[in-house]
Length: 133
Image (cartoon, rainbow, N blue to C red):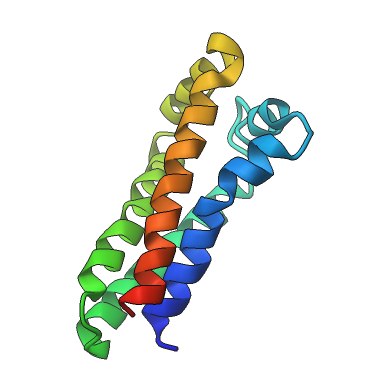
């Protein structure tokens, strides 16, 4: 299996299963999200975001050097995660305010909708990884 198959399966399954592990399994996911993105930026966020940016860089490197057909599709989709990483590093207060607003409105209903959207995109990525790469 090539890099893009593995990336698509891991990234896609994580997104596809997000509605399940965040909302179907009985636990207080809103409290978890509120704690993970506390008012003061937790120390783990910057190293994890930097590692994520490194993986995006590695993906672009693989795209340009591996010669895998249609790798640009997954490279661009995966690169969208860099937006969150950059926001977490450079504008955490705005990100925290957005998350807090979503959690407080309608008992976190918007969080569920975002996670369902992530699940649909995850399904598309898994299919892409299995059928194209």
